[in-house]
Image (cartoon, rainbow, N blue to C red; front, side, top):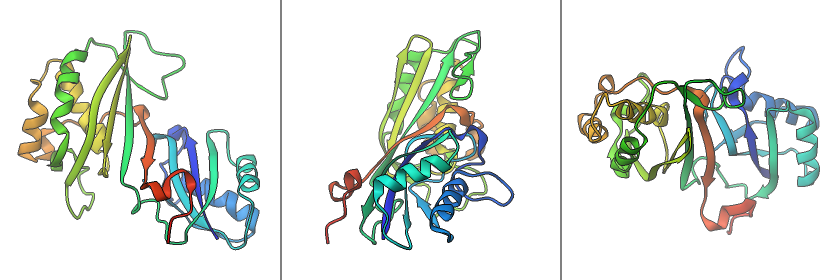
Length: 255
């Protein structure tokens, strides 16, 4: 029996989603909880490997269970065993062929910036605090430049193997609520640190250290050394993973 999980987590205290030797990971916590319930090791696969400090509002993962188990009971059992910063939002049976990463059609991330002099008592672990003024309108004007299919080599993580650095971005836009700036990006897939590097480049534009067209120039140059270091992990959220209609809402896929 294969089940699909939707989970949210605060990534502050973890090395990321993926298992790493001698480090605390989201995957490790979920697998430990499953092993406690079923008294046997169970591997969990996710739609995306969020990095250390990155959060998720709706990560999607799946696992093959050694025996049938009611979905609502499994959800309750897992949440009773997991720490308070990892929560299972939904459990549903899926076809054995379902793959949370390969079957995804797109992923949506958001990045949060607080632009004010004083820190936030509530958002310090979930946003990038920028003290100096940044030009929201300039960042908003720059954002659409990356929509479409491009070579994002300038925004990749150095040393991370990739078959191709070409990606398709469906949405790229900023919204603002007073001193909270939120960047939203949807794409077919993302390389490690790609979103955070895009955000960092737009902040340079917002600080008027680069022109609005700089994003386009970085895409054309394709040189990682020309782009800035990634923005801090704390501001990044995996918001949603999208699937074809036959796989939406935990449904069992059609034959």
